[in-house]
Structure formats: C-alpha cells, structure tokens
Length: 223
Image (cartoon, rainbow, N blue to C red):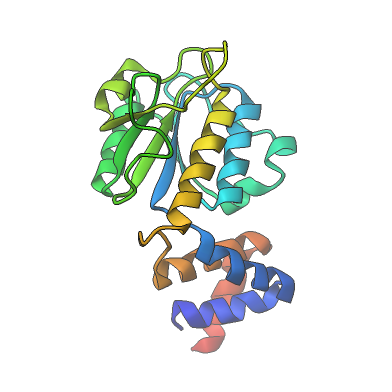
C-alpha cells in the first residue's frame, strides 16, 4: 500500500468536512518561509506566534530553548498547534548554532529582526530564496550570537515613541506581509505533491485515536 492509498483509507475515518478542509488548506501551506523563536518565555507570545503561523500558512516553527522552555497557552493557540510542525533545539553548547546549521543545510537565508537594518523591511526583502525569520526574547531581543550569524537584518518601520513592537505583533506583521507578497509573486512557494500528501496524512493521524493501530490493520488487510 502506497501513501496515497493509505491516505484514502485513513481519511475515511474522519468527516467529509475535515477532509475537504485538508484539501483546501494544505495547498496554502509553505515552507519557503519559516520562523525561529529564540528563548521566548511568555506563553501568550509563544502561543500567539503559533496561531499566526497557522492562519497565514507557515507550516514550520523552529524553537531555541537555551534559557527558556517554550510553553503554549491553549486558550491562545485555539488548537492551532496540532496543525503546525514545531522543531525544538536544546543543546548544552549552543542551541542557536544547532538551529542555524540545520536551517542553512536546508537552504534557508537567516533573517534577524532587529533595528540594525537600515533598508530591508518586510516590503522590500527579496523572496527568491527560502527565508527563516528570527525573533528574540521579549526583553532583550535576539542574542548577539544570532545577530552575528544572520545573513540579513530586517526592521519593521515604526512611527511612534515606543522602541519596539511586541514579539507576537512583530511576527504577525512580518509573516502576513511576506505571505501576501509571496501569493502575488512568481516564486514557487507551495509544497510539492509528495509533501502535500505527507502533510495531509500527518493531519489525519492527529484526528484519530490510536492511528498507528488503525494504520497497521489497514496495511495487514491490504496484504
């Protein structure tokens, strides 16, 4: 039984409405843009970023936990965390560098959100290569290590007295702007067919009780 046949059989255990949602939403997901969160300690901010990623179509979040454990608030996520892939980095030496190396190996340009950038904004950053947008802790922002490792620095224009946006607001502004630009561009930002199938399989499994047992029975019957 191949994965397409497996999906057809597994998805029979979920509602027609949910399967239709998967068919509609999966093609709107992207890995061309991803998010890196470094040492976020307020669960409402961590949760709000998850919810934003789900709503704009960003599938992956990379979480660096050197100092603070990444905790979610279910009242804020509203169930969105089960549709998003969360990759965690917790290393005694440097979780930040583990994350940077992993993303670079996948072809991502590391983008630090900071006031250092004079010219690059969400409206002007090039979209021709995969981008990993990094957001730092609520009090001090990104670590010096990540700021130095970044390939680009991006700033969000501000026109008031306050020095910075809240992290969850920053992420929402950046991700919404970039996804709107991507959807209006010629960039190939959508998942390929095999990745779409794997995503829908993953989502289907989250809807089932004992998905491994059901899947094994289906495979046994197919033999």
